[in-house]
Length: 166
Image 1: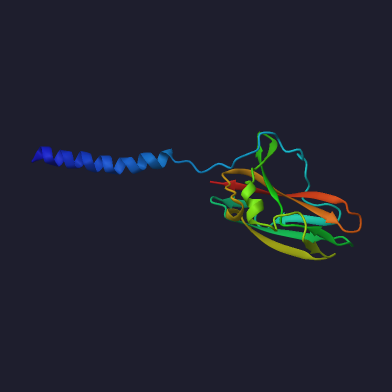
Image 2: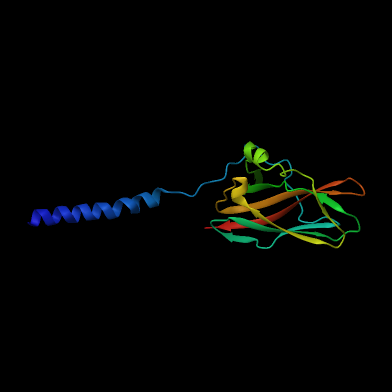
């Protein structure tokens, strides 16, 4: 009977330790980054007329949604689209997160035009990262968008920073 009890104890210990071992081996998915650093290493959060910001700049994992604000402080209209890209800071350099080609097929509106913001207006947008197949792990990120001044046709690239923590 003592042999049977010790076999049960061993089996119980094994059954308890296997999930603990497997859990310690699991890591959170890491975003796929493009090989070369971003060509736009220096990007402001605001220009003379337009400001890009996130409602929350610190996030705990998992990050599912980002609430984005665009504010036009200028005297002309600006246009922009749904298109954005994300970058992650690695050793002081920014690298773009890879966006799958299917995103452009699935979201016909994922382009750089279509929205318009009037002088003095603020718009809010919620980005569901699952819609774009983006997974963030811990680190420093920035969201990048382009805005076009209707009067001058000048394009301004802005970024909004966030930090993701375990």
